[in-house]
Image (cartoon, rainbow, N blue to C red; front, top):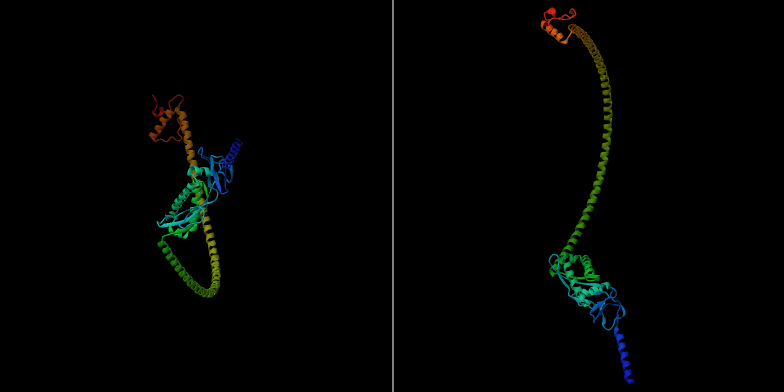
Length: 373
């Protein structure tokens, strides 16, 4: 009985030890982990983060799904590589001008611990995810290769590499939940015909360089000879300038003398012309004054005659008006006065100074036979 109890205790202790042993799971510093429960088929993380290096109590029904925490490499090459990572054949594509091109390249990336859960839910384990990474990177590199010509691949590899790297970095960040660290465009293989053409072009460029060097040498010689000629011409030009200055100074002196003589002659002519002009102007002013005085006298005479005629006419009109007024008062009414005026007009009789005397109450026109009935 005691032996059976002892055996049970030993078995129980062994089970507890085994349970404790298998309930702990550990992660290396180079690993991330997600907790997988095979009993409930659930996957959990560590509060939004992947589990990092350490020892964890998970229980008997759980284990860690491992993802690498270190930088991983994907290489596209026809040569065997001893480095850890995924190696795939070189990438075949075509240039923008239609030539086939083979690209050998490699890239290094690192998973982000905050996105491990998303990565697992979309792509599964790391092995499946890494294969998808490689296929997507290959497709992107093939597409980007079509944007550049064969000559650009040959001459501007250092320019093309960062452009492709930038596109890969964006895709890894947005779609693959990882960070691309480096990208190397290691080898570009173009068709042999193109390489031969490039080689021939290089030889032609070398020949052109030699020809340019000979041309530059000849140009230096010609420039030296030209410089000598320019110096000789400069000396002769200075001599000609000196002679020209001498002739110019002599001409200026002669011209100055002629100018002074001309100025003196012009001054004399000007004085004489001014004297003549003054005499003529005085004579014309005297004639104008005489004519003006005669015209003023005539104007005064005409004005006096006009004034006298106006005054006489005015006196005549005034006397006639006074006479008409007296006649109007004598006849007594305007109508009778108008009839009297009609008679005057018909008989052409001047009434100037004529006086009509009638008795009070008598008809003034009765003496002419015009008495009203």
